Length: 382
Ligand code: PMP
Ligand code: GLN
Image (tube, rainbow, N blue to C red):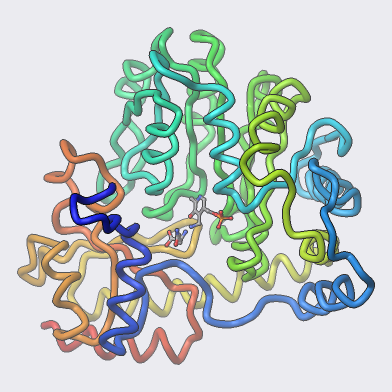
């Protein structure tokens, strides 16, 4: 990533947000909401700062948050989790993934994931010195082929890295796929590392954590992030949950990555996780309205659209509009339509780019008038 001239290659998200700022285009590239989440959560952070929660908190996390995470697991998923040994608070989901991968995988090990994948996965697996092995998710359903999954997982596999709901495609896994993953993890003695940051952003049915599948708990680390649920992406409060031996392994790495994190934000997110079911329903239903608005706008504009079941992203095919190369389309999109999107090739390894060449990811975690404006602008592409 370090170039000969001393500059570094920015992530696609930083690059696309810079493009939006430079051109004044509507930023449907990097996924972050354009309005605040529940007021109770914001107030709780202010109160925590005012009451002096401003020094290093415990390494595992503030006890109020550890306990709220355990209550949240019981309320939504019926899982009994010990807040003292089976939960770890992290600097966003990113640190939870980093600590887990660095703790469990090294040179000679393989990490199996689904492609396209969130860009940090390849970077973190490379930092660990391990090898990334991918299973394709193909347009338009983005569900894995069971035989391809079976042949990707071997005795070299240390981690099966799952992302459900999935970024960038918005797909969710069905029970058959979840069962197959658990079965393969058992057969090859692998750990399931599951990134479920969009757990509350689902539109058709409630999220089912893979850790609730029979036989999964003892070999699964589940990762989530308050940033997605409560529109606090800048607070970087995430966590991981799993059996004590796996959580301890991640903690050994975390103590040298960040040591501890964000003391006033932790009790605030604890307040958020304890909010009523109604608040969580509203979060999902307001996002569903946004999904429906943008996906119908994109369809009217002439794209083929894959309707996401979760997350705040939709993937479209630009080929019907005559654009076969999404990378060049995305570079010109601010000029052509005043909108920024991300080419899906940014989420795949070099050898797989051809299969995703004409696909673009748009984020819909924006206010309805912004999505209306973006849809009207994109209609000009025809
Ligand atoms: N995993 C996925 C799938 C994501 O989309 C994101 C957010 N971009 C992250 C992890 C990182 O989350 P956080 O900001 O909490 O580190
Ligand atoms: N998760 C967000 C996305 O996929 C933002 C990630 C980031 O900026 N690193 O767009």
